[in-house]
Length: 204
Image 1 (cartoon, rainbow, N blue to C red):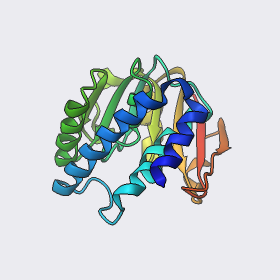
Image 2: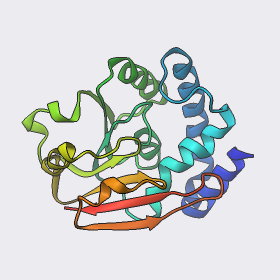
Image 3: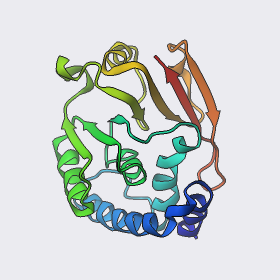
């Protein structure tokens, strides 16, 4: 059922690539399920079938409001490679950098990237605040799905992003951390299979 919901979502937003992407996400499901059995990347209480909506469809929600093609993108707090790997499957011409401070998680994500043969998807093991200055001004877009944006992160995110870049935050009901950003747009992308969901688009 959830797989069919995901397929219908692709039919609406990426109709020319449905079969290709379903094959890729099938591989991602198996790889993520396997790695998650070894390292706790995401909640193990989530049934396998729900990955299609709770993680894959949810990861793709920003495609409804902004173009992510041909971009250099940082996934801050990637965890199990979400949303970065799903976005890279949809936008293989973009370079995705998956940032997490936990070595075990990044090693598991590396295995998934290798299985899927993603040549434009890379990993960074670091805390955000420890990133070297050489990364400053590097990214067109920063996405963040699972980390609350503390005030100490704001200035670093702004340093990492290029001029005219964007920060994209995935939010549900709690959006109290977005008031620190002046140039923000709130997009309601709620979906019956996921529930209340907002994409916060922050312009630099």
